[in-house]
Length: 140
Image: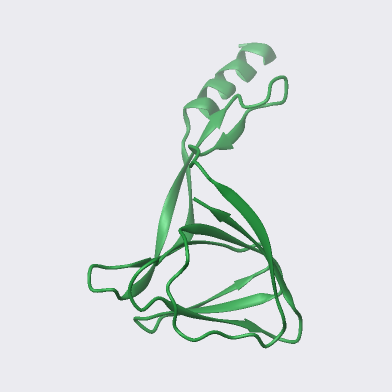
């Protein structure tokens, strides 16, 4: 097998491989209690932008709009449901989000959270540390 044939076989193996990753989801159950869960993402090699090499890509989810949100250092909220189903991307600063079941998770710069607790008790949030936070919210 020459180099080109070996490369071709390796490419075939890569393009049939599916990798997994996860992201956190915050949702409300039937009783209105909010919980976190980790959701698996199926990533498959995709010829997305030829002639660039293939990338591992998930399926797409439709979105309606996005916006930026700044919260000052020390900001905190009472319990509240999300105003809309959205994906929350932390660009700077750090957040702590508490689900109504008591579980707390931290989200630093580079973190993502799928927020779907649009009913029930909701969640409480606060900005940790001495720095303001900048985030992007993408409504789904």
